[in-house]
Length: 374
Image 1 (cartoon, rainbow, N blue to C red):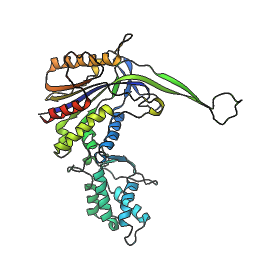
Image 2: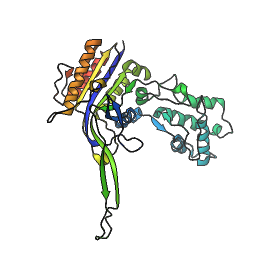
Image 3: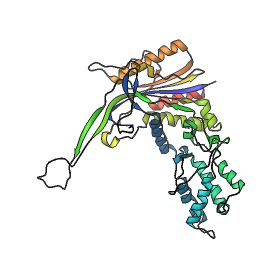
Image 4: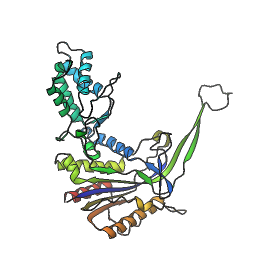
């Protein structure tokens, strides 16, 4: 039986610039014929991964080009008393080891000791690499390490045996171009968040004054503009439960803990873009989590294909929630499917029977995990 856990969230942000494009403007997209504010899926996943670090650092992999320096920091204390040890030799050994990684092509290292590609490795995989390098230090100082050492180095990164994968890699997957056999298909898909309504770009003109300039000198000492918008975002993600358990080597208990942390992080974690300027810390006011069986996922963004418009004294978030509930019920009537939906409705929207309303996010998470486990 295929089980999908879907989360739909509405979050109304005050003026902000949470996720910028290459010009510094808030990201946007055209949808339903109008310009919408947008937060990229990569930005949302980054916020969740940062949230995970507060839950359990072992759940979070490291995406880095600085693996040489990281391993040097770990291995040096273990080898410092060995005859012939020097930091220069250690760096050479680690560079030889890292350059031995890869089947499609080998990892290259520049003069700053950075790899030419971002390596996405779990804490346990880095620990395993560290162990092989420490044990094979003398061999790695040779012109060419033995085939056995090269094999052990590559085996330190999970391929078929995924017992060392972190929760975030199991959820979001990874692509290693130099080692395609180590790639991981994601158990979770995250949509780009879009505003439920049309937006226009706005500009904040700012100036700054030199505090130590003479009092009789007029004018600003720095000036510029910052683009921003204010938007009620529809946010969506879906988790394939069976795939998540499989990615974690059948550890259903760890998968359940990871799922709970993901759902909570998806609701609570915020992008950090320009928050020191705008402080747009506005909690999510509508959440619907559905546990659905043997049916296709349903992104409800088309509830907002016609941009939501509000009259004076109407709530944009409430009208968005009502449109979402109508779309969900229409799709359920048309396509059917078994499942349960649990709702946090701080907007006081009229949901016309959509889902079971819960008093808190904590209770939604409890109900969701119970439904998943059956």
